[in-house]
Length: 102
Image (tube, rainbow, N blue to C red; front, top):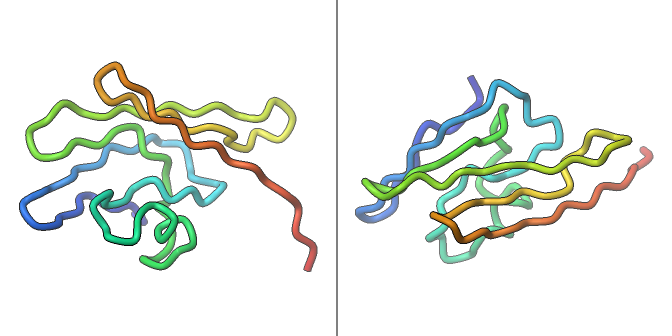
């Protein structure tokens, strides 16, 4: 269906849960955080294209799930923030969008 079910690295297994909502903006938020290159390598598509749907949560091994919420631009509907809740601690990613003419 175009979504990553799980990712592994060393002994870590990360399982993802997805929304029914399509990932229209192509946000790369199903990723393996322990990659040496970091999140930017996923964002530029180095490891392939983004999932078809938005990630709602992910869970590493048997740890508590990390939940994700999104904020949108009122006019365009584009995602402007991704907020990951790590057991009460928030990690926020901001997105900006611009029109590219071909």
